[in-house]
Amino acid sequence: MFKVAVFVGSARETSSNMKLAKALAKLSAGRLEFSFVDIASLPFYDDTLWNDPPAEVIGLKRQITEADAVLFVTPEYNRSIPGILKNAIDWPSRPFGESVWTDKPGAIAGATGGVSGTAAAQVHLRSILPVVGVALMGRPEIYFQSRPGAIDDELNFTDERVKTNLNIWVDQFVQWIGRFAVARVVEVEDERKTA
Ligand SMILES: Cc1cc2nc3c(=O)[nH]c(=O)nc-3n(C[C@H](O)[C@H](O)[C@H](O)COP(=O)(O)O)c2cc1C
Image 1 (cartoon, rainbow, N blue to C red):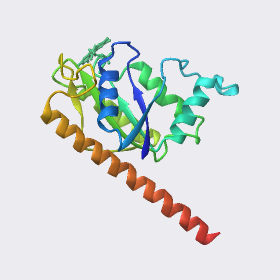
Image 2 (tube, helix red, strand yellow):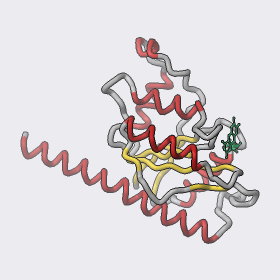
Image 3 (spheres, rainbow, N blue to C red):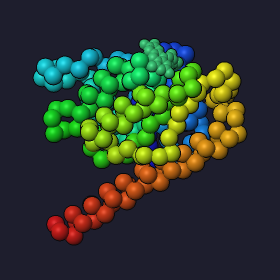
Image 4 (cartoon, helix red, strand yellow):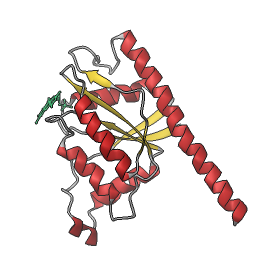
């Protein structure tokens, strides 16, 4: 089963995006294994800190390296992504030439109370992530309107149509990750043949 490192762009205890991420984790159980990344304890990006990198940064890079894929679940702040999430994207992209995002399959989701479902924030993520090297799944997309009761206390999606669409999203994400896993196996076999 593929391991997915999950980045939630909100540190709020009652975050609707964390709830969406946890509900997705439940829905995809048996197909994907989610591990949640603690981005709130990261320091603000500072190049000089690479002289003696903080344990949180080393841990973050390791968590991404060990994952088969990454998932970003983001709120929209003023038509973009929250600073806390951008900070968590910047750290693993450095030192220059040592980005751990490279060729890591990824996907995006987002929740907001508004009808736009974080569309503007997701557009920004779609321009940032390929630049740092994430191999981003184009579709299906998740624009989640977090109405009361949309996800129940047991982390189930209550609307059957939404659930069906999200199940399709999970299957597509599994397939997307699989493409990169196959490519890695072929690469290793080719290296062995030429060694
Ligand atoms: C600084 C700030 C800016 C916001 N800007 C937007 C916005 O541009 N579009 C939107 O749909 N919601 C916006 N919101 C509302 C958030 O989407 C909403 O608070 C959401 O629940 C935050 O995610 P969370 O529940 O995971 O913490 C904004 C909230 C804050 C605090």
